[in-house]
Length: 160
Image (cartoon, rainbow, N blue to C red; front, top):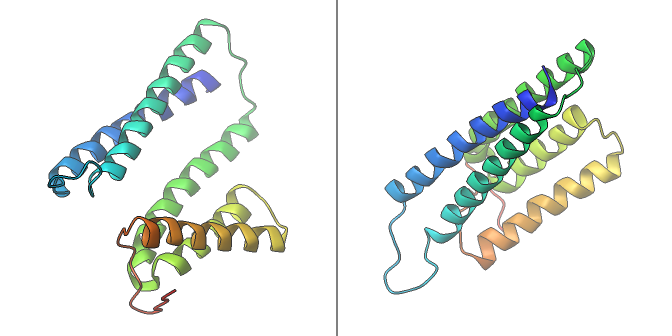
Protein backbone atom coordinates (compact mmCIF):
# COMPACT_ATOMS: atom_id res chain seq x y z
CA UNK A 1 0.00 0.00 0.00
CA UNK A 2 1.40 3.37 -0.95
CA UNK A 3 1.86 6.22 1.50
CA UNK A 4 -0.81 8.30 -0.21
CA UNK A 5 -3.33 5.46 0.08
CA UNK A 6 -2.55 5.06 3.78
CA UNK A 7 -2.93 8.80 4.30
CA UNK A 8 -6.22 8.81 2.41
CA UNK A 9 -7.58 6.01 4.61
CA UNK A 10 -6.31 7.67 7.80
CA UNK A 11 -7.71 11.04 6.74
CA UNK A 12 -11.11 9.54 6.01
CA UNK A 13 -11.25 7.67 9.32
CA UNK A 14 -10.11 10.73 11.28
CA UNK A 15 -12.64 12.93 9.51
CA UNK A 16 -15.41 10.47 10.41
CA UNK A 17 -14.24 10.41 14.04
CA UNK A 18 -14.12 14.22 14.11
CA UNK A 19 -17.63 14.55 12.70
CA UNK A 20 -19.03 12.00 15.18
CA UNK A 21 -17.16 13.83 17.97
CA UNK A 22 -18.65 17.18 16.97
CA UNK A 23 -22.17 15.74 16.81
CA UNK A 24 -21.72 14.10 20.24
CA UNK A 25 -20.45 17.37 21.71
CA UNK A 26 -23.59 19.14 20.54
CA UNK A 27 -25.83 16.32 21.81
CA UNK A 28 -24.26 15.79 25.23
CA UNK A 29 -22.79 19.07 26.45
CA UNK A 30 -25.16 21.87 27.34
CA UNK A 31 -24.42 25.32 25.87
CA UNK A 32 -23.16 28.06 28.15
CA UNK A 33 -25.51 30.65 29.56
CA UNK A 34 -24.15 34.14 28.93
CA UNK A 35 -20.43 33.36 28.85
CA UNK A 36 -18.34 33.18 25.71
CA UNK A 37 -16.38 29.98 26.37
CA UNK A 38 -18.53 27.49 28.21
CA UNK A 39 -18.11 23.78 28.79
CA UNK A 40 -18.79 23.05 25.12
CA UNK A 41 -16.00 25.29 23.75
CA UNK A 42 -12.88 23.14 24.20
CA UNK A 43 -14.32 19.76 23.11
CA UNK A 44 -15.89 21.46 20.10
CA UNK A 45 -12.61 23.25 19.30
CA UNK A 46 -10.69 19.95 19.39
CA UNK A 47 -13.25 18.30 17.11
CA UNK A 48 -13.03 21.14 14.60
CA UNK A 49 -9.21 21.06 14.69
CA UNK A 50 -9.23 17.29 14.10
CA UNK A 51 -11.65 17.72 11.18
CA UNK A 52 -9.45 20.45 9.68
CA UNK A 53 -6.28 18.41 10.02
CA UNK A 54 -7.93 15.33 8.53
CA UNK A 55 -9.14 17.36 5.53
CA UNK A 56 -5.59 18.68 5.12
CA UNK A 57 -4.28 15.09 5.24
CA UNK A 58 -6.84 14.03 2.64
CA UNK A 59 -5.91 16.88 0.32
CA UNK A 60 -2.19 16.15 0.72
CA UNK A 61 -2.74 12.45 -0.01
CA UNK A 62 -4.67 13.30 -3.17
CA UNK A 63 -1.84 15.61 -4.25
CA UNK A 64 0.75 12.95 -3.51
CA UNK A 65 -1.17 10.29 -5.40
CA UNK A 66 -0.99 12.46 -8.50
CA UNK A 67 2.79 12.12 -8.28
CA UNK A 68 4.02 8.54 -8.30
CA UNK A 69 4.52 7.30 -4.73
CA UNK A 70 7.05 4.55 -4.14
CA UNK A 71 5.90 1.23 -2.78
CA UNK A 72 6.68 0.23 0.79
CA UNK A 73 8.54 -2.96 1.59
CA UNK A 74 6.37 -5.80 3.01
CA UNK A 75 8.11 -5.83 6.42
CA UNK A 76 7.47 -2.09 6.75
CA UNK A 77 3.81 -2.68 5.94
CA UNK A 78 3.56 -5.31 8.68
CA UNK A 79 5.19 -2.96 11.20
CA UNK A 80 2.84 -0.13 10.22
CA UNK A 81 -0.13 -2.47 10.55
CA UNK A 82 1.01 -3.44 14.04
CA UNK A 83 1.47 0.21 14.98
CA UNK A 84 -2.00 1.14 13.74
CA UNK A 85 -3.63 -1.69 15.70
CA UNK A 86 -1.52 -0.85 18.76
CA UNK A 87 -2.60 2.81 18.69
CA UNK A 88 -6.28 1.87 18.49
CA UNK A 89 -5.74 -0.73 21.22
CA UNK A 90 -4.03 1.84 23.43
CA UNK A 91 -6.92 4.28 23.01
CA UNK A 92 -9.48 1.59 23.88
CA UNK A 93 -7.42 0.40 26.85
CA UNK A 94 -7.07 4.00 28.06
CA UNK A 95 -10.83 4.37 28.00
CA UNK A 96 -11.25 1.25 30.12
CA UNK A 97 -8.48 2.22 32.57
CA UNK A 98 -9.64 5.79 33.23
CA UNK A 99 -12.45 5.00 35.65
CA UNK A 100 -10.78 2.34 37.84
CA UNK A 101 -7.27 3.83 37.92
CA UNK A 102 -8.02 7.51 37.53
CA UNK A 103 -6.66 10.06 35.10
CA UNK A 104 -3.06 10.38 36.32
CA UNK A 105 -2.18 6.65 36.71
CA UNK A 106 -3.99 5.68 33.49
CA UNK A 107 -2.24 8.43 31.55
CA UNK A 108 1.14 7.46 33.03
CA UNK A 109 0.62 3.82 32.09
CA UNK A 110 -0.65 4.43 28.55
CA UNK A 111 2.00 7.03 27.65
CA UNK A 112 4.79 4.80 28.98
CA UNK A 113 3.43 1.77 27.11
CA UNK A 114 2.98 3.81 23.94
CA UNK A 115 6.55 5.10 24.09
CA UNK A 116 8.09 1.69 24.69
CA UNK A 117 5.93 -0.52 22.46
CA UNK A 118 5.03 1.71 19.54
CA UNK A 119 7.80 4.32 19.47
CA UNK A 120 10.45 1.84 20.71
CA UNK A 121 11.97 4.29 23.16
CA UNK A 122 13.79 2.32 25.84
CA UNK A 123 15.49 5.03 27.90
CA UNK A 124 13.79 4.63 31.30
CA UNK A 125 14.38 8.20 32.45
CA UNK A 126 12.98 9.61 29.22
CA UNK A 127 9.90 7.36 29.34
CA UNK A 128 9.29 8.17 33.01
CA UNK A 129 9.87 11.90 32.54
CA UNK A 130 7.60 12.26 29.52
CA UNK A 131 4.88 10.09 31.06
CA UNK A 132 4.94 11.92 34.37
CA UNK A 133 5.22 15.35 32.77
CA UNK A 134 2.35 14.72 30.37
CA UNK A 135 0.07 13.24 33.04
CA UNK A 136 0.72 15.97 35.62
CA UNK A 137 0.75 18.74 33.00
CA UNK A 138 -2.58 17.68 31.50
CA UNK A 139 -4.06 17.30 34.98
CA UNK A 140 -2.97 20.79 35.97
CA UNK A 141 -4.13 22.38 32.72
CA UNK A 142 -7.42 20.56 32.22
CA UNK A 143 -8.32 19.58 35.77
CA UNK A 144 -7.20 22.59 37.76
CA UNK A 145 -6.92 25.51 35.34
CA UNK A 146 -9.92 24.75 33.12
CA UNK A 147 -11.99 22.87 35.71
CA UNK A 148 -12.63 19.84 33.50
CA UNK A 149 -13.76 16.67 35.27
CA UNK A 150 -10.98 14.09 35.27
CA UNK A 151 -11.82 10.77 36.94
CA UNK A 152 -10.02 10.33 40.28
CA UNK A 153 -10.25 6.53 40.07
CA UNK A 154 -12.03 3.90 42.09
CA UNK A 155 -9.09 1.56 42.75
CA UNK A 156 -6.43 4.23 43.13
CA UNK A 157 -7.47 7.73 44.20
CA UNK A 158 -4.93 10.50 43.64
CA UNK A 159 -5.70 14.06 44.59
CA UNK A 160 -3.23 16.82 43.95
